[in-house]
Amino acid sequence: MKHQLTKQDIEKMEEEIEYRKLVVRKEALEDVKTARAHGDLSENFEYKAAKQYKNQNESRIRYLERMIKGADIIDDASAEDEVGIHNTVTVYIEEDDAEETYRIVTTARGNSLKKMISIESPLGKALLGHKVGERVLVEVSPDYSYYVVIRSIENTPEDESEKLRKF
Image (cartoon, rainbow, N blue to C red; front, top):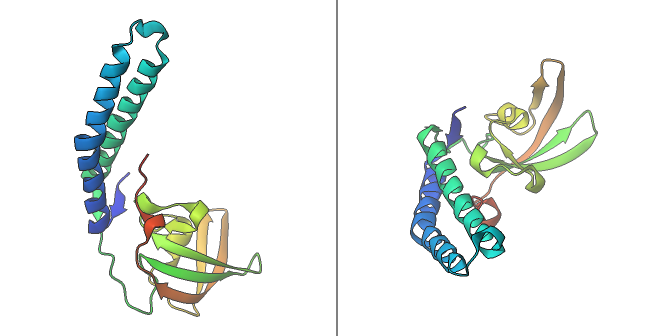
């Protein structure tokens, strides 16, 4: 599956890859060397933990490189009065008689626990390009859909909570 990413997403991923290759990889290899020097590897927890950390770092590098390689680069510009990437949108969910606020982001930054929804999610797809006051159909599956009304749209700058995951 191709991920839709902005140039800014790609730049952040490349920065993380460089950091992991130049800093984290070096530290992880040093930790493995140090733990290996402690003797019997079959019962050496430090060695196993150091190897696991090294492997997690390498796995993250490969994941980011695959994301970049297979990405569709999209423009994050939108009309000021339309829902676009990086906008904070307040919607009224008719079915629940509730109001919710979400930040529209790319897949790499999506985090539903922080109310940051991807442009590839059903709600994100449905909201893109619509204006305040519009009633929008959100199709979750062929059997289920619901309506939301856009109450407000704010252009919000990137903040720390939106940065790419680093472990």
